[in-house]
Amino acid sequence: MRKILLILALANILPIHAADEFKVNLRKAQQGDAAAQYNVGLMYEKGQGVLQDNALAAEWYTKSAKQGLAYAQYNLGVLYEKGRGVTQDYTQAAEWYTKAAEQGDEQAQYNLGILYANGQGVTQDYAIAAEYYAQAAQKGLACAQYSLGVLYANGQGVTQNYLLAVTWYTKAAEQNDANAQYNLAYMYINGQGIEQNDAQALIWYTKAAEQGNTDAQYNLGWMYEHGRGIIQDYTKAADWYSRAARKGHSEARYKLGWMYEKGYGVEQNYSRAMWWYKKAVSSGYKAAQKFYDQLATEGYQPAK
Image (tube, rainbow, N blue to C red):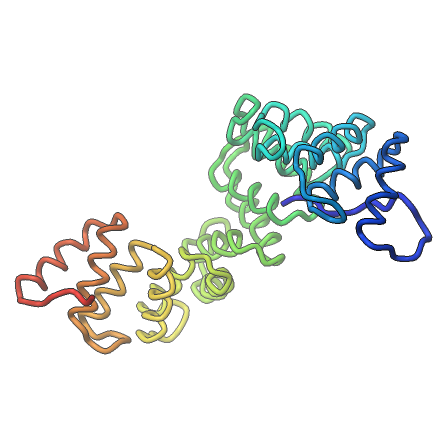
């Protein structure tokens, strides 16, 4: 996520049009004002008051970043990481993120953690990634809290600790991070780091599913199908399987085909079943092929 905070170079002034604001900031930027240089870079990047130009954004961010402005250092790091206005260069991205991170910028700390976790521009080191995630997580950044939870769950760079994984997932989940909500539900249903609780798993899967997390949608369908944490409801199971299936989830496609074949939660329809089985196979769930073949031998044709 990129910062879009605009540091006003002028205080106590009436609102002005973007083009006029750009001119004011440009004049001050040319005089060496770091905040104004950042503003000019941001306005070029966003196309606010001037034609959008990432290359010029990078130039002005660089001027500001070299004067030590953390926001500019972070945004310049983003441009290098993404290859916007500059040649993509993870090493440069890491260097600028580091400068911003050392000034306490939590988004830079998080992004630097990602680079260390992936070995991009730096030697892969999960322990260092965990340190940067922790710095950002302690400041309340949800994505960092989630990522730190993942490292604790997997024992990457830290001693595996399901309790701490749950702790960090919970903090992120309460900030509406869908991935954390999904992982927290997984911990509840499997009793890892917390007492096993199907009802809590259902709550967190629902929150993640409603945000469009396809794995959560599939698992929520599974819970409704099997009556885990809720009264068994094939109709709702089919609905959640359908949502995940339409987004390409291979197992959800198989399960939806199976429900059409059996008439569970939907009107029985062998042609629709075959259609979803075929979709499941095409997206990698090869086990669905035998169900498709069985219906084909019985003379049914897939829906068109």
